[in-house]
Image 1 (cartoon, rainbow, N blue to C red):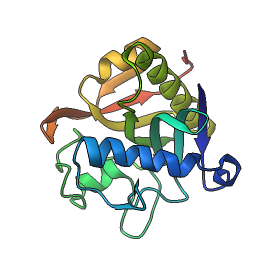
Image 2 (image 1 turned 180 degrees about the vertical axis):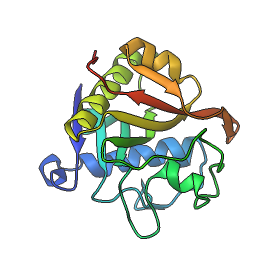
Image 3 (image 1 turned 90 degrees about the horizontal axis):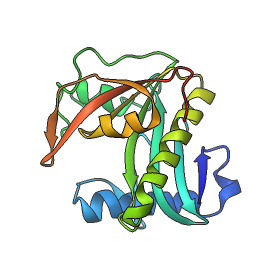
Length: 195
């Protein structure tokens, strides 16, 4: 199992890994969860898949086990910034505007994690190892970009995930039902701990 952080600067070094990540996202979000998202050539994508973002893939060679996208809160692409902020500003119909307790922050040291998934093909006995690899790389890559805080709209079971890593985190919004599943904005503080 490997973990790779992809960017527009390095995707050419990793063969089909980036396109396979987008194909795995399509399988997870469009095929399995039946979300109404853009797709082309068997890949799921949206306006946040742009040069300001980074993508983390947990993989066995080119087979994707898990993934996440990270976007700086300072990103701009036309009218869009980052998903949580844009939802709060009413730009995304599928996510409620009241997802955060406070106004979505914009600062160089704050990043967002989105499109987090673990492939349904990962056996249950391997899921914890895959999740830990994904989160450890997310934290490492975020820190490398200067992030000290990371926000994400995640399933409401997130406290169990971050406790396993010893990460300082708190709820940054109320629990909301999105497609019938409880979700919540979580804020992780990327201090000195990394397990």
